[in-house]
View 1 (cartoon, rainbow, N blue to C red):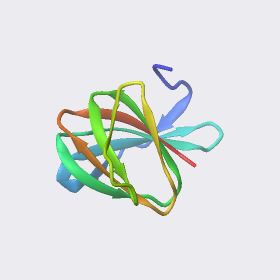
View 2 (view 1 turned 120 degrees about the vertical axis):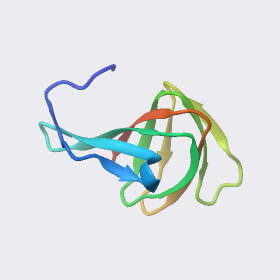
View 3 (view 1 turned 90 degrees about the vertical axis):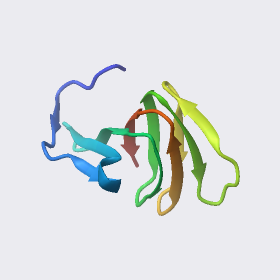
Length: 103
C-alpha cells in the first residue's frame, strides 16, 4: 500500500535524538495509530512499550534486537518485529523511511 486514506494526522512532529529521527502520528478511523518517519544517518537505540512492526518504505538500515548478537539488514519493502517492553539498535548510512505499526 503506497498511501493511507481517510486518516487524521497529528500536526506536531515526534522528534527524537536531536532530530535524527522525526515522525508524525497517523490516526485511523478505528482509533489505531501508526507513525510515519525518517531516521537520518546515525546509530540509535530505541526502547519499546508495545510490540512494533517497522516497515521499511525507503532507504536501508541494520538492526540488532535486544538479546541478539547479529545485525540484520533491511531495506524498502522489508519489515522487522520488535517485542513490547524491549529495545533495538538501528544503524542507518542513508535516510531510512519507515512506517511503525503498533500492537
